[in-house]
Image 1 (cartoon, rainbow, N blue to C red):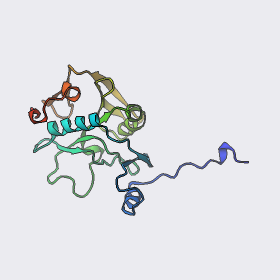
Image 2 (image 1 turned 120 degrees about the vertical axis):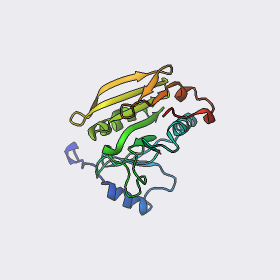
Image 3 (image 1 turned 90 degrees about the vertical axis):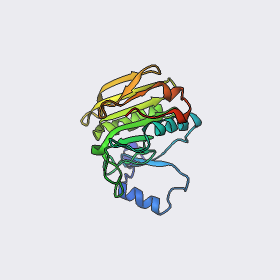
Image 4 (image 1 turned 30 degrees about the vertical axis):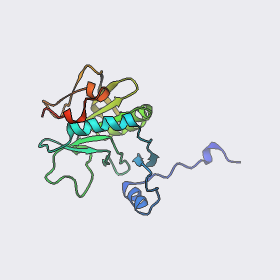
Length: 201
């Protein structure tokens, strides 16, 4: 009779194996997945409000910049078994972008995850991976309670952030790694016309 001690641990994959699986067509053409600590995890469908929030962030942070490279819903490589697809990443400005690799932890200034139905998973599963890999700053945009949960000062040993605070719709969001850049949090919850959006920096 099988017992709990007979259960085999899950097969964990490296980023290289994960990419080979994708190239071999293991995942469906429209299937959204990411690699979290060696496990291939299905991503939730993007709802209209989630999509609009990412649109707002892309207008705010996108376009030509000389202080950061903005990426939207593209992968980052945190370690050999972790390649999530955050909603927004601000990376250090390279000369020609990132043609040979995705940004790694040392390249990342800020990660933004937009969460509605995924809030619990983002906090419980993804946030510790960002802390373990010393991602400097993570924002969780909580569309359920109209707040941004800001995390700074990662401790890789505990997989936690030492500095956590919340910003509501009437507050402003500063980025530790980009002094002088301030985003009014209200545009994430009460978006103005997209053509009116632009950074101050």
